[in-house]
Image (cartoon, rainbow, N blue to C red; front, side, top):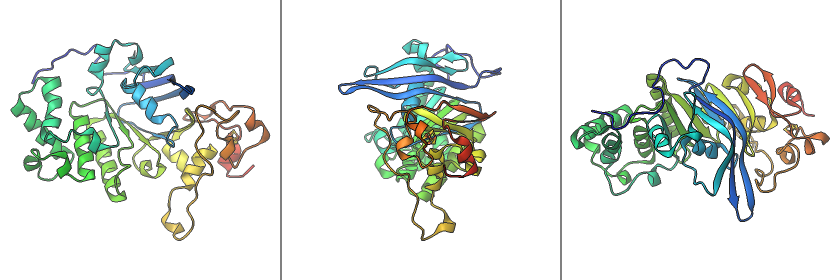
Amino acid sequence: MKKTSTSVLPAGGALGDEPLLAVDDLHVEFVTRQGVVKAVNGVSYSLNPGETLAVLGESGSGKSVTAQAIMGILDMPPARIPRGEVRFRGTDLLRLPEEARSQVRGQRVAMIFQDALSALNPVFTVGSQIGEMFRVHRGASRRDAEKKAVELMDRVRIPGARQRVHDYPHQFSGGMRQRIMIAMSIALDPEVLIADEPTTALDVTVQAQIMELLAELQRESNMGLILITHDLGVVADVADKIAVMYGGRIVENALVHDIYRAPAHPYTKGLLDSIPRVDQKGQELYAIKGMPPNLLAMPSGCAFHPRCPYRQDNCVTEAPPLYEIGPTRSSACHYWREVLDGSHG
Ligand code: SF4
């Protein structure tokens, strides 16, 4: 099977000090009739081969918009990127011409979307949709593409792949459809896989199976995995590090075990306290009070202050920087020490 295009980016190999993927001071805005919505405000994070980064936050926090900027699938306009870089193997994807960008998209950096049913075409068999990746990008014959589709369906543990390759999306359960989406996204052996709420529409058991599958595929291929989620509970066992987003900014960066041991931002603490626990059966579940901020009218000072149990007077006027509180940890809270100590201000 031959490749149909030559990549403009360096193939694998040593990365030196440069991470596999680095988002650096990214800003994304949307121009709307009501005004300019600053959806992403100076977000930075990085990912190395074999690493899993969970990007966590409520809807509107900017986590999916950041992913869409990485993939180059934002509608521009109304979106615009006034500042920032998205470096893949040291090359800034934002500065690449569209043709070069499209060689990276789907082939070297791939994405799984949350709604598998609407992402799959109902009038084509799943085999032809998975196989299309090989026909379009690798010049495979129809027969070879189908063979590859069966292999991939096996790889994502779809039972009876050889028979089911001719079935249509509606003949599969939600969990199986998500596996088909995963098969399509890993078809070309991407180096980075971005999974945007991959388990949201699924029940808890299927959620766990999909997360386990993603972790297994990652171990097999050493790809970098970005898991975008609003649910801290689903990433506990699979993520290496976590970036928590609120109001378009990162408010806490940490290794996963540090976050679970002691969060350093009140918002992260609220998310952790909202996870149902088996030893608290019958007790009312904690919920963070209030609503996510309106991006057109952001609160002054710290954007989290209207909802924050640790708030002090200066929080209303002074926006906290992202304080470095350790080699692998940062928190955008003036009172991160108090939060770490677990004492309310
Ligand atoms: Fe809460 Fe103040 Fe910290 Fe913001 S800076 S999270 S309002 S304590």
